[in-house]
Amino acid sequence: MLRDKILEQLDRKLFIHSCIFVDNTLDDMLRSLKFDYAIELGTLRGLSTIILSEYVKGKVYTFDIEEHIEKYEIWKKFKVEDKIYSYVVKNRKEIKRILKDASYQLNFKFDLAFIDTVHNYNNAKADFELVKNCKYVIFHDADLNGVDEFVNEINATIINKTFAIWRNKNESTYS
Image (spheres, helix red, strand yellow):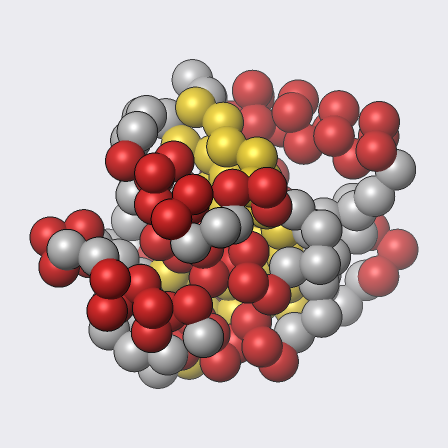
């Protein structure tokens, strides 16, 4: 598992706010799902991106509003940079355009989204609106600041307190 290598090889300071530091929950969830293309909203240092890249068959498209340049070196160290497209964006409108263009031009559908952005109800809802056509949507910090309220509203399943997964029941909407 790449998670174990990350924990062994990287400076502990990089793990602040990282979902991979706590336990294997993300690994366990991803291992149980089948997905070809993934979206990550909220990249930070790119540690969860590495975990996503371990299980994705195609590529991970990751988005953040700030550039954290250390992620590129980390991805290279773990030899996953070829599985990742990283974007620094100004807003959700830009993310929507990039996702639509990628899906259309390359003729594929995104089947998994991982949301780890600003932890409140309004942002959780707005982020979900961007990716609700995915087969699976995973929320990190599902127990915080209104995110808990939103994941309950959409009937997502809470896993190990800090994660929630929502499963799209309407396969015809996947995009």
